[in-house]
Length: 308
Image (cartoon, rainbow, N blue to C red; front, side, top):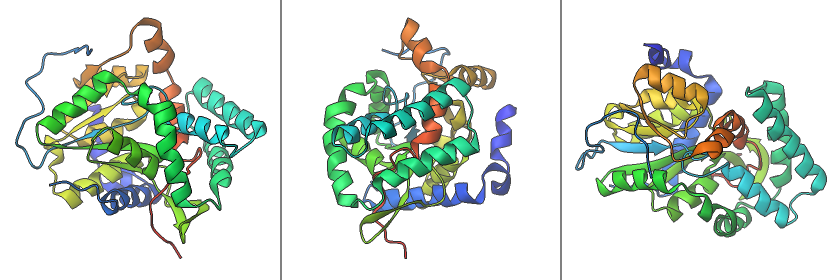
């Protein structure tokens, strides 16, 4: 089966920086104190999740899976409102996002430029400042963007006594705010470096994207004694095939066209909470572009660790 290529040894499935990013994200999630003791189905399935299974958990991608659009786009709106950057920066970010949306691919040079320009905005700002602003921005722009259907799926896992984690390229503290507001267990996200509580403008490893997400889930499963074959994962993007392939219960939620094809070929379950034109508008390569750049664009909140 095609998905088996994602289950080959670590050196073949992830770069060294992916492993570093994944392990840093898992450590950040655990250090944060997050440990805890209207759908259309396209296939018939047995009842799931199974209640009373302490070694099962669920992993949810954020952008276009749990939340309409990209968390970093909404966060950027909040920072622009608070004059963290000017119109010139806004236009540059808009061009970068347009490139990713139209190209539907991840050119390393453009991604590096996006990350560098975004990290420069928050360099020198205090972690506590951005965390406080993040709480406000969630209320202003994000709370009304949660997909009710996906939220119900997450709640089903919680009601079954399972842990539920967000796994996203967005900054780990932004993701943690969202997870806490939704009553989830915690979040895995991109880790930005800070020294003495101040952002340095550098990342730990790379954005938590693609193979790095799989590494983060793998590291967390080891730390939390989870059996990945009994876990579930949910995503809209073909970039998350490595993560989806790790678990015994993969779901394609609001999938882009490539993921939909892959899910059907592999017999994965599908959920789509969009209708008509909205599904077309959101589904095509927006997820790939926004997910890829999210770890760098305005990586404003990060793990409370000090790197010397």
